[in-house]
Image (cartoon, rainbow, N blue to C red):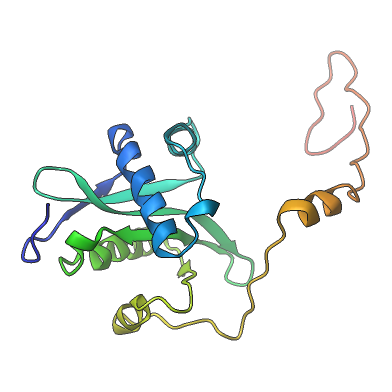
Length: 186
C-alpha cells in the first residue's frame, strides 16, 4: 500500500505485472460504469505486450514493495500533418489508495519524456466527460480537443462494412529465379 507521502516508481510493465494490470483495467471499467464491457484477460494482455514486435506498450507505477498501484497502456499513432509519430494513451489508472502520491503525474511525465526523446510531437488520450481528472489534466497543461468528434465503428456495423471491402487484386507469382524489386513484376 502506498501512503500519500510516498512517491511511486515508474517502470515498464514486466510479465509478472500483467495480472495486476488486468485487475486494474477491470477496476477502471467499473469506475467508468461499464464493467460488463471489459473482457480483457491476462493471456490477452501478455500476448499484446510481449510478442517479438509489440504494438502495445505499458508502464506501471509501483510502491516500495514493487507492487503495481497504477498503469499506463499506450501505443504509437502517426500524424500525417506533422509527419511524425506520437503516443496514444489508451488507459491510465491509479488505484484509489495511491491517488495523491504523484503516480498519475509521473506516468504521464514518463510518456512525455518518451515523446521528447524520440521526437514525437504529441501525447493524446480520451477521457470520459464526467471524470474529475479533467482538473488534473488542465493543471499539467493538457487541453481538451472539443473541436474534434470521436467516432467508432464496432460490432455489427463493423462487420457489415467489412463485407463491402473490395478484395485486393492478386499479383502473379514471381518467375523462378527472379525476385521482384521495388514493386516490379517478375
